[in-house]
Image (cartoon, rainbow, N blue to C red; front, side, top):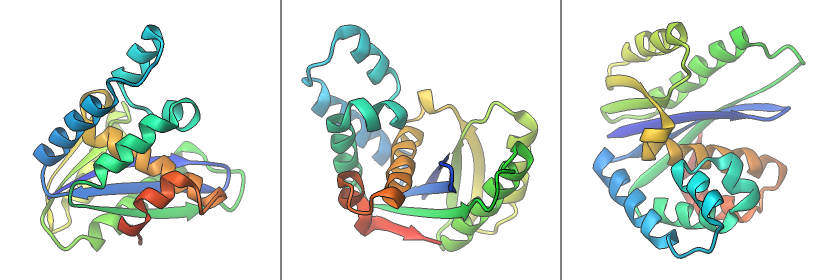
Length: 190
């Protein structure tokens, strides 16, 4: 099993989300099918290059909802669990030190929820000391086989979980949002 992990936040919440799948191959195949499905969508060439380069939720949520819907539909075609944990910010002092502490705490909640042996792949922070600390702490769990950071540009599973993260975040301001309705049956909060 593979657990892809990403995080998101708004003014009130910090959310860490895990996409649990049976294998990296299933995600890669789903990603290829997704890209094939959206190839015919009409977008200006320069923008298409930007969007197709890396399917970031910040772009899809605002400008290309149709592409996001297709992505979520494709994710639901594979055997998945979407597990998330969140922290309600209690003041304006959510600095980098607290963010890193909460990220690890929320990730621990997700990892401890999973019974299966897992490989954990999290979105790279380009902050080596923090990434090393994540790897050391999460590797201590008996069900964790391996922990690694990967760049979302190169990793379809990270792009998928990035969009699931934003879907969950958006559901807090609108529980009936269409993105959330597509995936809600597979979402578990821990």
